Image 1: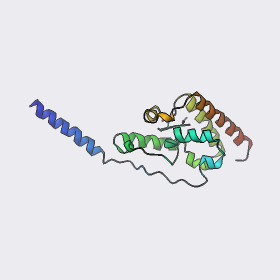
Image 2 (image 1 turned 180 degrees about the vertical axis):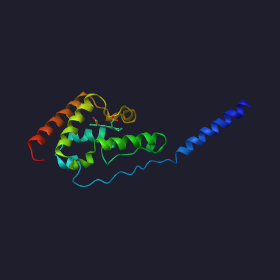
Image 3 (image 1 turned 30 degrees about the vertical axis):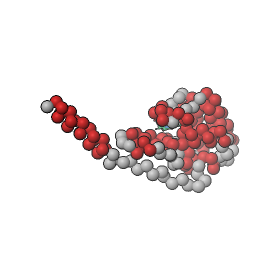
Image 4 (image 1 turned 180 degrees about the horizontal axis):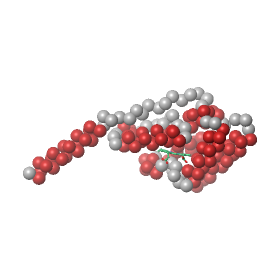
Length: 157
Ligand code: HEC
């Protein structure tokens, strides 16, 4: 009897796992408009560009890379949500559309988020150890946000 109950339970678990695979978030990246990327609006130092690409772009650009496990529910739901909310907060592919004020605010937040260790998200780091921010990367990024802010405040861009 107990064995049958267990078998039914196992079958139900399998059915649920298979069933939820049909709720598939749309993972297609929104289009990238030429000239709108942050690296096309400002001249980015190479090391800054590399860090933004390795540690932030998967959630903060329209050029997210999707690993194989991003297709597996329920993981896919969480990943999709992070990317959706992340892009909403900050999208390096749409930088050109940001006003001067918004750019300045976002630059300030970038340094704050990285310095406080909030970004990149810790769950992301479990599977992307290369995205980890150390002290020197953090310093470099904050120095860049300060310099660019000064440039934006002083210039016409
Ligand atoms: C796994 C996805 C992911 C990665 C990788 C990631 N972020 Fe985020 N980011 C988010 C999400 C989701 C939010 C929305 C707020 C939250 O959940 O904390 C966010 C919010 C932000 C915000 C706005 C915070 C505010 O004050 O409203 C900034 C700035 C930011 N991220 C910068 C970065 C930077 C810089 C990197 C790279 C060093 C990075 N993020 C990497 C997902 C990510």
